[in-house]
Image 1 (spheres, rainbow, N blue to C red):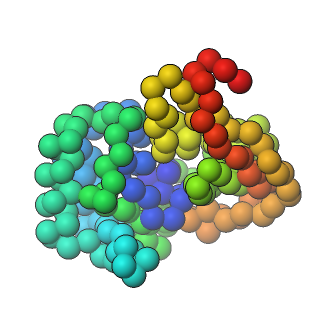
Image 2 (cartoon, rainbow, N blue to C red):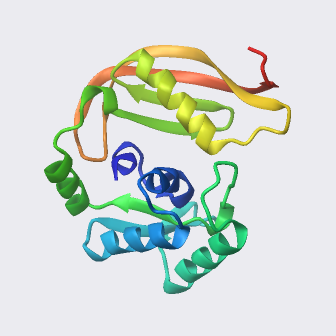
Image 3 (cartoon, rainbow, N blue to C red):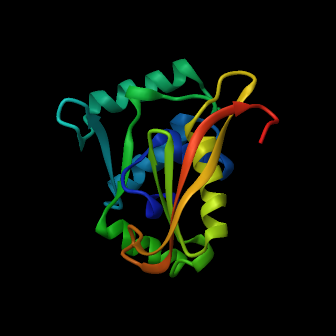
Length: 189
């Protein structure tokens, strides 16, 4: 649930690596956990409505299609898979925020960040510039697949002081760093 405090609605493909590392070895198991959190009122399950450019509640059909697509494409997590249009998104509710804070306590400064991926750019808010680089590296690794023999490189474009708020409504003082993205030869700087 920690990733859900850093982003708005987060796609399953973004959440699954952490759930996999936590011991959930199949998309079905991870989805069942997330659907269970929804049943408790802590999450909302959403799909992206391309025509309306907004999220909408996931239907039973979209959930079934999602699980079927995951099992057909990759039965296990793979960092190089983009599940695309069949992706479900999960968003913390007010009750979920309260439960997260009750269980985990306040977010430590080094864990406080939020990120935004844009076309050829990553914007990260964190309590220190060092943390923004770590977060940017993670976001790029999880979100972009470079062609064979290449890698996605990023370079800092702008740094500015910033106050930011997590989904838990905790506020932090720190920095906002914008990184430009480009393809580079593997092994090159």
